[in-house]
Length: 288
Ligand SMILES: Cc1ncc(C[n+]2csc(CCOP(=O)(O)OP(=O)(O)O)c2C)c(N)n1
Ligand code: SF4
Image (cartoon, rainbow, N blue to C red; front, side, top):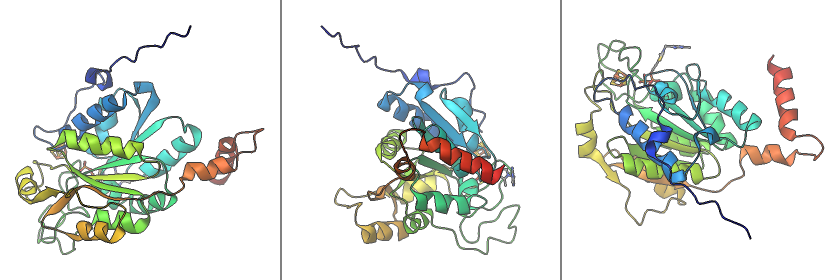
C-alpha cells in the first residue's frame, strides 16, 4: 500500500534569507521582494529548486534577501548568466532581476536577443526610471525633460517603451506590475513562471530618493489593470495597451506559445551523452 507524503504548506519565512534589505525606506523594491516571496510560496518550491540571478544596481541586490540559490552578476549581463544556468541546470526555476538601467541601457542587446531566443526564464525588471545605485542619473525609461545629475538641463531623449520593445523582440509573455500591489504582482510572477518561455514583467518600482517624478502617487493616479476582455493573444491589442500612456496598463499584455531555447537544445540530445554537455563544451571552447 502506498502512503502519500502529505504536501506541507510552505511558509513565507522559508524564502527569506538572513540578510535584511538595505534599500532606502519607502523604496519600491520592498514591494517586489514581498511579491517574490509570495510567488515562491504559491508555487511551493523548496528554496534549492530556484535560482535568482541579478545584475548590478539597488534592485539587483534582491538575491541576497531570498533563500534560494543566487547569483549577483555584473551590470547588464544577467542574460548571459541566465543562459548558462539554463543550459547547465535546466532543472532550476530561473528568476532574473535587474533595474531599468541594467535591462534597457547596458543590457539592452542581451535583453533583446534572450527574448528572441525564448529562453525559459522569468525576468522581473524593477523599473524606477532612474539609476538608483549611482545616485539618480537619467535612465532609458526616464521621461523627456527629467532633470538629474546627468541631465541637469532636462532629458532631451524620449523614454523607451519596454513593453513595445519586448513584444517586438519576440518575448512570449509580456506583463506589467506595480510594487504597491504585491499580491497582484505575485500572481503575475506565478503566471510568468508557469509560462514556458521568456516571461518579461516590467514593474513600476519607484525610487523615492532620486526620482520625484515617477512616484507611487503619480502611478496610483495613472495605472489601470487591463479589462477582463483584453485578449493577450491578440498582438495588436497588446501593442495598443503598450502604447497607452494614460492609463498605463497593468497586467498580462501579451502571451503566445513558441518553442523554447531549452527545447532546441534538447533536440540535439543523442541519448548517449547530454546535449547540454556538448553545448557547454562548445561555449567553453568559443569563449575561454
Ligand atoms: C560596466 C559597468 N558600468 C557602469 C556601472 C555603474 N553602475 C552601477 S549600477 C548602475 C545603474 C543602476 O541603475 P539600474 O540598473 O536602473 O538599477 P537601480 O539601482 O535603479 O535599481 C550603474 C550605471 C557598473 N557597475 N558597471
Ligand atoms: S536609491 Fe532609490 S532605488 Fe536605491 S534603494 Fe534608495 S529608493 Fe531604492
